Length: 226
Image (cartoon, rainbow, N blue to C red; front, side, top):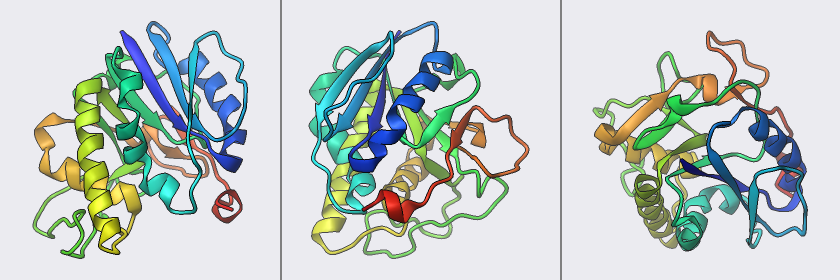
């Protein structure tokens, strides 16, 4: 299979790129043809035996680099035309154990490590396109790792980009940015969804009953966002 791994690494987040790629080389879909698509405003090189495509991407102030990620993917869809599967991962994460074909599916999302046993932070304002009514049952998912078949992932990316743009133009930012919009999509398209455990977005300092496969590194957000 031809796999694309999407990474946004603008400004200070570029410092996470080499360690992430080294970990992906070691653990991510080892038996498949993987290309790293790196969205960056930096002139950088990375060491890997896999293909790397650098896509010039303007850095914008917080929270746009997270809120606008699906617009970035939608606007650059031509780069992904020959991939079978696409996955997005936050730059400040690391693969620390095997991640293989168990992640294949039409659309794959990761249960949030903070809410795997109940609770969620859904968008409660009905004027947002990310709004989810309280009677809608959801498994709250994290924004840090998701993907699936390229056609399905890009369908989602296009819808989320349009919804986020509509909110933004109306002066609305969803409570958890792109993650709120992702959860809205998951809630209303459940038949497409394959739900991964928090193993695939495991907080570095957490202690929860799952095997660590991908960890989210502990960092000082305020410093990185400047």
